[in-house]
Image (tube, rainbow, N blue to C red; front, top):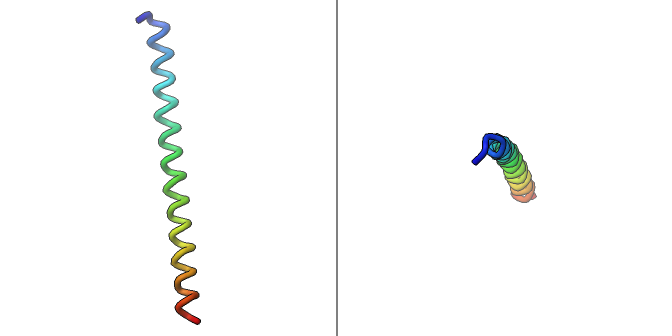
Length: 48
């Protein structure tokens, strides 16, 4: 592998890693929001 190729590969790995990290945290936030909505709905139903 030439030096140039090695560098390109490192940059791609770096980007992949960071995008994965961002995606994961977004997914977690969405899940938390959905859970909160569900629990709110449940408590409304119980109050009827």
